[in-house]
Amino acid sequence: MVRKAQVDVADSSDRFTWVDTDDLNGKTNGLHYTAEGYKELGKRFAEKAIALVKR
Image 1 (cartoon, rainbow, N blue to C red):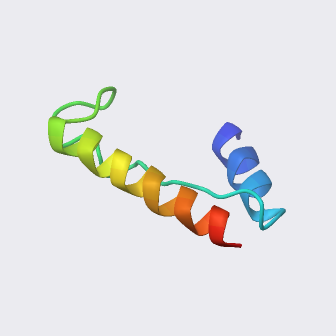
Image 2 (tube, one colour):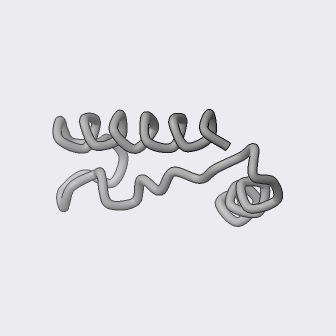
């Protein structure tokens, strides 16, 4: 329910965006990201931030 609300807000305006992180935890940890997951998270945040600034 919380995730749906977050996605709905992200979809409600071109001033918001959604960054999916479901695949960043690795196969053995459902709570924390892997080292590579944190690097990928930073890349995704940066890409989305740049896209928002360019709008």
